[in-house]
Length: 128
Picture 1: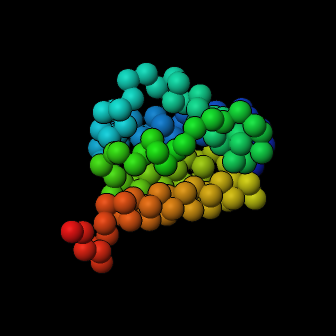
Picture 2: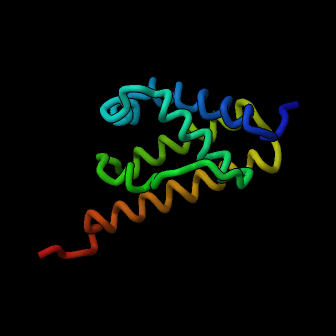
């Protein structure tokens, strides 16, 4: 039986595993490759981000939405991101916090997509 997410080491495991999938993915990999030349700082920031989200540990500094807003992201990108993320969590963990992590990722993807569609003038808006 798989253990739940319990500590920072578990975060490092799922972040590294997830982003190795992202790098190989034909849909979202090229978007990340276009803006990330050195993955180490990005991974370190993601460790701190998830440590703050899951365990309330201070240390993350940044504005994730602002970093993603200029990218050519649309609904299929977020759907793929979430599929890969959930697969990664399920491969390594099982439990209440693992489920909560997937739920939080889903809410983030939904919020990012909603904000991006409003920024870009969704199909129901007329831009003059």
